[in-house]
Image 1: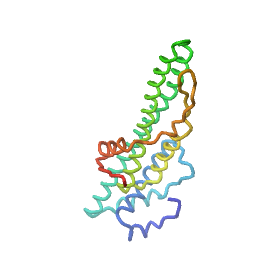
Image 2: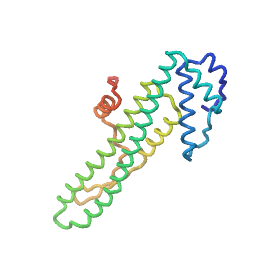
Image 3: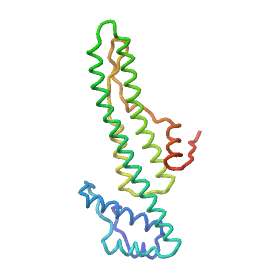
Length: 212
């Protein structure tokens, strides 16, 4: 949205979908700015007068339907983005909890109790990976839905991709194999196809088949 916009051309020849995409990009960015959120070098693409003219351009029944459909899609994607953020926060909480409990487990039990320590650590690791995979699969499903639904808000999509970047950082954690400590990295975990399909069906009502 960095290019100058010819609002008159858009109003006269642009499709209803193009107008809706631009208008909601403007709305989403303006809301973020009003809340004091750092939006980087992004600037509002429209003046207040241009935004009103664009809104008023949805007059026919067909155009109004396009507007309402995209508005509903915008709300849905933003709600999904907020839920993804909650999943990532839950994972981060579990990550630090795992590391604290790992250290406690490592130094509480000694001697011939290594087997017990290993089993306990494995149980903690399973929970950690579950939380990480849940966030990763939700992100993957959301990106598929964005592509399939035709959602094009660059501001919102950029935020979602920043969340993914944080999720794929070096989340290194220790595990025990016998009495040996091994370092693992959660960035090696891949999303499960079944989990992605379940999210797409339950959360987004989308049946999706990957290419064989």
